[in-house]
Image 1 (tube, rainbow, N blue to C red):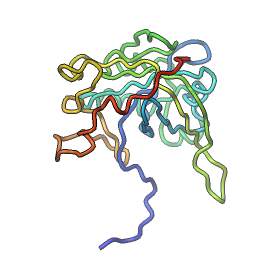
Image 2: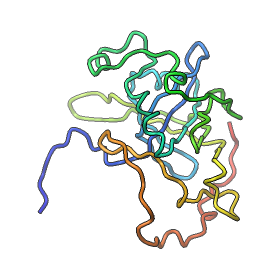
Image 3: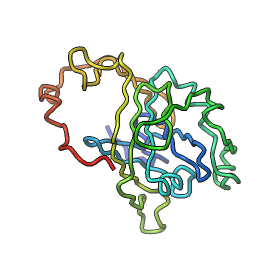
Image 4: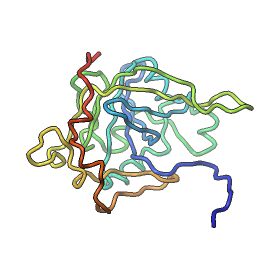
Length: 217
């Protein structure tokens, strides 16, 4: 039996990302988020339109998507109520956020240089994806109010993967049996369990999905 309800959010579960960008003064900013999905080497990121990270991404037009493993939940939690905005926006202040300029140090994470973008990578994250901004779209359309979020389409131009996650004999493949991402579902942390059932789609060679070569910038 199904029942019609009205949840406050429909946050049904997506990977957590630590999104690194550069502030206007050139210092690094780091923000946890999980409104993200991929097709090929392009990714859509959902961010509040008035947030510090959104402003950085629109201005710099590049970022790094750092994907933490399930074991890093405590580290990510240290960033949960921090903002790079000073002063803290009223709606975030009401939810208990505080300004923090050095989020890397607060979380105990290490900023390491990227290859192709200016924003740093998070050394402790097993997967680090350097990206450039392609397009921005207003998101959250309703008949009674203007959108309060932005959907950023970014294109991955360099992927860094911990060697322990690379499939044996396949140097360009991530082994899904080894990758254990941190998942957020209804604002709570979860991890992946073991593979449940063979997938027919997995029988298609992964190389079949590789996009045609494109210019990096």
